[in-house]
Amino acid sequence: MDLVPLSRTTVAGHSVAYRIAGEGPPIVLLHGFLCDSRCWREQLAGLSDHFTVLAWDAPGAGESSDPPESFTIADWAEVLSAFLHSLGIERATVCGLSWGGMLAQELYRLDPARIARLVLADTYAGWKGSLPPEMVEKRLARCYRDAARPVEEVAAEWVPAEFFADASPQLAGEMANVFSDFHPIGFRLMARSLAETDTNDLLPSVEVPTLLLWGERDERSPLSVAERFRASIRGARLVVLAGAGHVSNMEAPALFNDAVRSFARA
Image 1 (tube, rainbow, N blue to C red):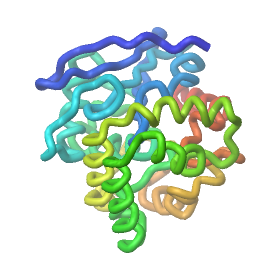
Image 2 (image 1 turned 120 degrees about the vertical axis):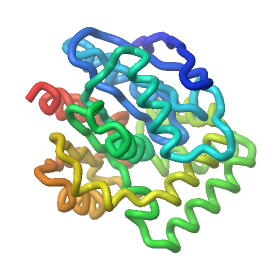
Image 3 (image 1 turned 90 degrees about the vertical axis):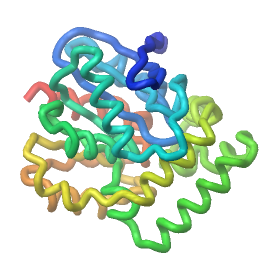
Image 4 (image 1 turned 30 degrees about the horizontal axis):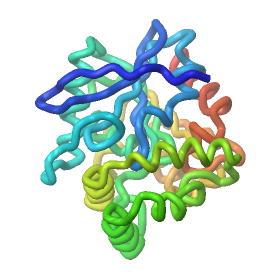
């Protein structure tokens, strides 16, 4: 399956790369940290028959430029809002996985009119808002350390164990190729944003239809986190993807796509 070619635009001084496919109601895809738009290959192909599917490389990831050291999740949300406006996407189904799901929540806080429907996949209310403090501290220290280590060593430790439950060699190789292109500054800043963010105050105010998609075997953001989201967001629906780990859209693409398609067309 060929990858949708990159396009590029400049937003608020940031060079932003993105992939776009199809025609129809827009679906915006927000990747996790240590990932980029390539991780949405199956969604760009599988959902573009009925939708305009847009996946960006966040500043600090993929082919986009690096942000300054002062960048926060609120800054990413502002750039994302401006990016969508620049492409004429005024209202969309917004789907964020892991760090991208936290970004989707912050976009809702900043610009709720931009979001018609919300898909939160294997995500967090920030690490701070979802995990014990000692785990947050341990994760952040590891990320700071690994951002400065040789890529080959770090990839061998993270892929596939941190992302998948039972990855094929092909899937593990695909993720390793993406992971190996991580930006050290993006690695640090995205990890820091996860460690500093708590969106629990926001969740009860979410008023758009919300779908929670979770890998059954996600160990980085376990199902107990998903249950807290379901309890906090009025009317949120949880779909558990059998056998999938943290990056469920890559490990169970057919199930993921079917759930998003049904939700976006409802």
